Length: 150
Figure 1 (cartoon, rainbow, N blue to C red):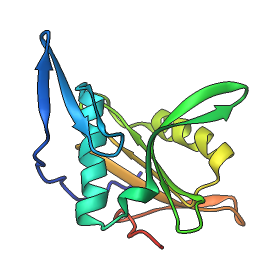
Figure 2 (tube, rainbow, N blue to C red):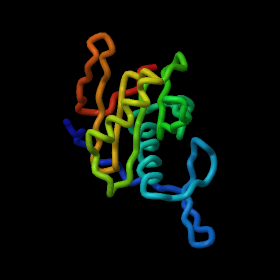
Figure 3 (cartoon, rainbow, N blue to C red):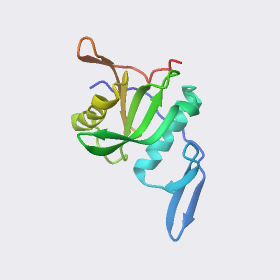
């Protein structure tokens, strides 16, 4: 797999402590959520997509439920195009979780339902993104996260 060579900037987040548990404010869901290592990566990716890649906030869904094999699964981040169709799925892992083929397989299974053009996986340190070619039933690893096509 071909890793994307970027480092996420350090963003300023609203963090609260309640009863010895830390929470981070998710500006898309407009609520505080438990600050787990995976959630920190998800919030960092969301900020990167909005601030650095100029993705529209209104086109990003967080923890979107999908029906897969009669089970409800949640996609960490789904980006939609201007026509309201899913365009990119991102799977976020904690920094301690190594990105493997199994991680890509997970997001690829979600794509059987959503049929997006781009799959992205990250643990905050490693970032991988590929473009799906449905006609050729293949994919191409990318050097960068795509700019949103609107």
